[in-house]
Amino acid sequence: MIVDVIDRERKLLRQRDEAMMALRAAGKSYADIAREFGMSLENVRKRIQYTQRQQQMERSTNPFEKILPTTARILKLSELNTVQQVVERYFAQELLTIHGFGFKALRDVEKHFVPGYRYQRGIGITQTTTLA
View 1 (cartoon, helix red, strand yellow):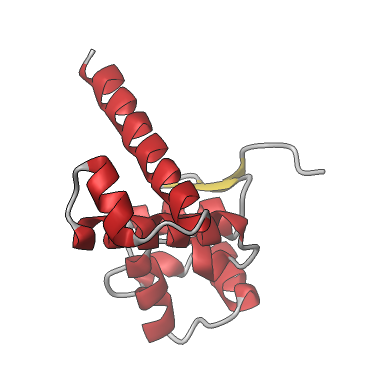
View 2 (cartoon, rainbow, N blue to C red; view 1 turned 30 degrees about the horizontal axis):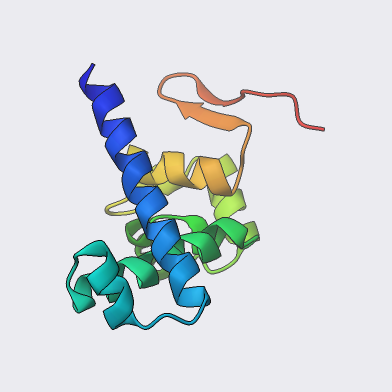
């Protein structure tokens, strides 16, 4: 299936990026890495920086650092700067009233701020998993 092909390609790219990160951590220059992988110096630099940001996001416990940049921008413009403010607005079902805040942003908030809960149109917020 096409999805399997895409998943395989993404996995290979992720492995390549991790290999570049390992070489950089071992002290290799961007130029050496670029030659080894047959890539431009600028592309290597961008891939390593992107991978570093991804790893930092994965390690972070701050949900504001894990959400999509667009979601973060909308929350900031709405002056929702703390986890408590976001969670309160979520449970009051007010997030979707914010201009530009749609279901994709809502799912992003659910994933990082209130895991185990899900909003469904016409039903409201339901608990999806048992929280410990």
